[in-house]
Length: 445
Image (tube, rainbow, N blue to C red; front, side, top):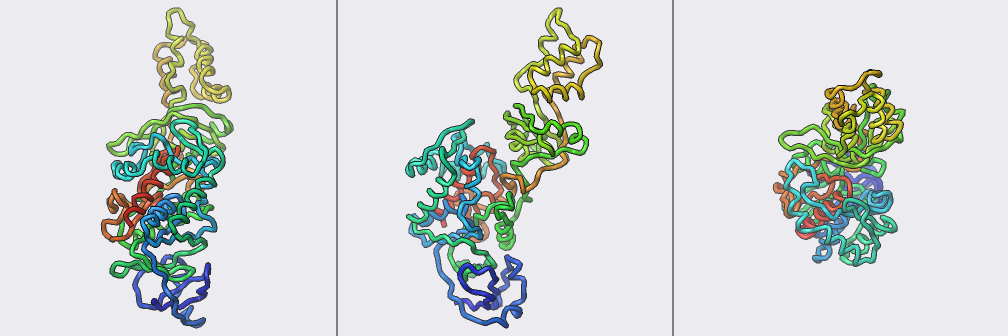
């Protein structure tokens, strides 16, 4: 029994419970920052603490996977989430059809300060394992491109799958529940929540990152990690559109809506050179988006350049170098119009064309070719967490056991999914990390 002074202790209460037990654990909500005396005048009461084996914070992809795996092992499991529905980000993913995994998921498709960290979890739970679960539930799906698997019908099928598995595993789910305080005494975690006190030997943090705040994203997972002394790799928006400087916006943004295939690459960070991504680019009213830009944004560092090959795999001006070929600016312009959308070709020519009326030299032709294959620009920034699909950075992998996702410092404390410094490429990779990390923690907690 833990003595609590309750401002309002009913189920799904939105008021805080303030500890008066003398604990030094730090508060995890604004309500908890109030002194106990401010609530004590309402009433004092003893609130019974419910006991579980495993508590999971977060009813998203990773959290529900962990809960069902823990429940299958006979562990009394409780999932807590402040949202009013489970799996809210799953429901909006993939245009509402959920790109639930990628056939080619491998450690090389993930960013982390430790590029090898995800290897163990991805090997223990593969795309084929989740596909088997999808097929078990009779969910029709298809491959779109590059190994990306989508539901034929709706992302709701994946949420329903996870909820059915949790129900069969007898994992309880409590929604609209705020976490107010987390403590650890000896071998047990005690949580004060808006629906009362709960305890468990294992605590799995699957609270996600900061992306898409309108869906309820918070920094709770990072706060818990810091409370227990775990290092955080600075979070940042990833898989996010990039914005132009004022000069580039003036030059290009009236072409909003124009799209073409490119290879996007970024400057090397340290010893590892980022990969190039050959996918579509889209000019927006503020900058650049499209799959190629979202991919490279995860590698981009503020103040550095992004390079864009606007005609990948093509020698645009090769015909001008043939014997007896005409080398006029008009011929060069025709070559550009053959590879870029009309409006973009005209603008590119206006910015980059040599003076009219003269035949082009080999050096000039080579320069035009290089410019077309290496458009370098320094973005002003990104569209931020509001438009980011994921959050890069997070709980440092140096703090976690790669086989179980358990803290090396705090036994029984696990971090999984997006809250960890493991970020996948666009195309189902982040879901695969959620399934794999959730599986490993659920099997260990």
